[in-house]
Length: 134
Image (cartoon, rainbow, N blue to C red; front, side, top):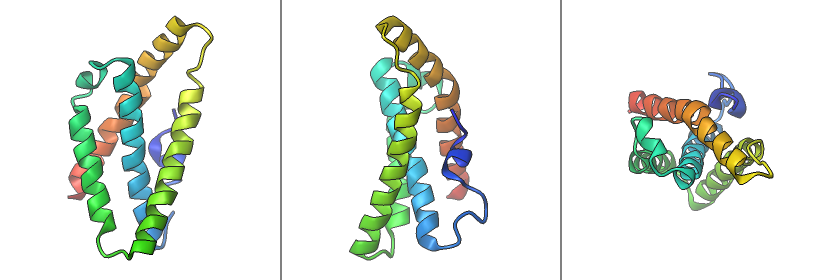
C-alpha cells in the first residue's frame, strides 16, 4: 500500500487553498474509516492489535469532519465532502482490488496480512497526526 501522504499527493505545499487542505484532511479520515471497516469485517479482533479500536478511529474521523466543516457554506461543505469521499473510495478500491483471489482462503490471508501491515501503519499515522494537530 502506498503511504497515505504519497497516495494523496500530500506535501506541505500540495494544496494552497483552504478547500484543498480540507479535502486532504477529510480524505485521510474517510480512508481510515474505510480501511478499518474492511479489516474489522475480515477479522473483528484485528483492530485491537493496532492499539486503536474501531470506535476510536470513527470518533477521530468524526472530529476531523466536524473541525473541517466549520465555517463552510452548505455548498462548500457538500463539495469538500464529495471530493474527499471520492478520493478515499478510489484509493480504497485500488488497494482492496489487489487482495482479490479466486480462493477465499488466499484472499482472507492476503487481507489479514494487509491489515496487519500497511493498514495498521496508515491507521496509526492517522491517529498520531490528528492527535498532534489538536
